[in-house]
Image (tube, rainbow, N blue to C red; front, side, top):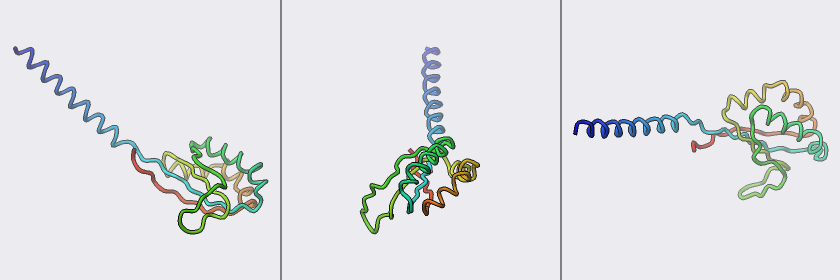
Length: 128
């Protein structure tokens, strides 16, 4: 009889510890950060052929994930951006800053400034 109580108590304690561990893991998950850019391109052909492939490679190397990019933007309310939108997912705001401060980004920045004007910002996503 004593063995049954010991086994039952051990099972309850194991379940409680497992539940606590799962809660702790969910609490540690940081929400993603989204970088959104509205891009007014002055030379679309050069942007698409010269700048965009290099920029996307730099983003990927820095840990970003391009979710959407392009010209097919449909306005729901207000005026749509002039030409292009880019939506990039990052693990943290620090990762975005590291990408922006990287030598690779600074190397292609003059090309970006020559070919267009960018308005960009970040927003923190929701925890999953």
